[in-house]
Length: 136
Image: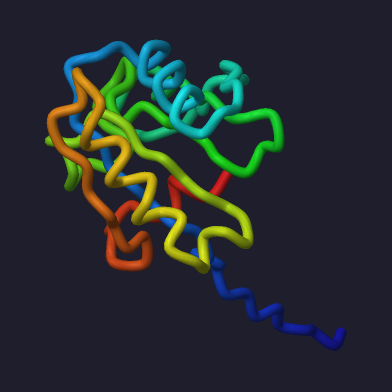
């Protein structure tokens, strides 16, 4: 039987922003919606099976109406989404054309002005060890 090999390269073509905050995730989604003049809705939680834990890892996810910006909690019921970034509470993933402009930099500036947000980081998803967890 003739076999064919499928070559697949994962696409990390999105902007990633990390947030450290004293606020709950729903309050962060409200603040992010206020800055971007859109509404963020809690969607189905991200569930990950990891053999190191007895239960699924569950992380809250909020996305805007156009589904091009997501806010994801880094800390779940069992550990962290991105283990190497334990100092980050949430991630913002930007998936659209504006991500190629300076939209993410303007958002970082606006987020730094918000009360309750202690630090904002621009991250390169391709350099993270657990980057596959961000592809959902």
